[in-house]
Image (cartoon, rainbow over all chains, first blue to last red):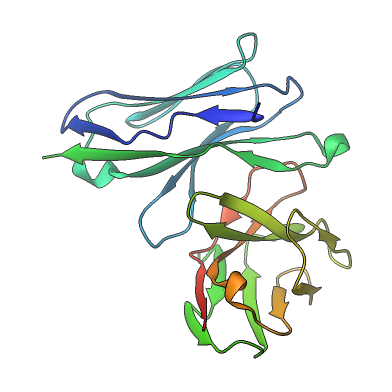
Length: 113
Length: 112
């Protein structure tokens, strides 16, 4: 079993739709929970990160962490064609476990005009 | 604010040639990393430097060497390039090991 599981998609939605991206994980010691956006031929861009359970909002993006279920989500409201990219969830192991960054497989999102 | 800057952006090498990939960050981060990204394999850690003066192997270190030149700069060297090292290489940095990382835009390397 992989430490982080993410549905690879691809996911295609019409412009204006609400998008839900999800990851599950197995290591209860993970601390930081991150979402990266990667456009074609670009590096992963850190979109949002949280340290604890709960919600964090930034404009049209909401990140949600449920540590009891080992489940994280990214919601994109009023999706735009410019949101078309691959979205990667990632988690940090604590420093005493090596501090490694573990990525999900990435979900390819396409928002159609 | 540039963040993480990588040079060059593209490079083609012949088998056996050597090359150094450069990375610099302007966020005053302590930790820096080198990854490679291959189709179907995701991002794999090659080497990292938890702090200035230290370097450690990641998942796939064979065929590579690194130098943490100072707090800002971390270079990756291929001593004798092989076709299996054709990949996209990303440098990243974070305040400390175990904290969110910021990535550069990558170096696309082809080895013929």
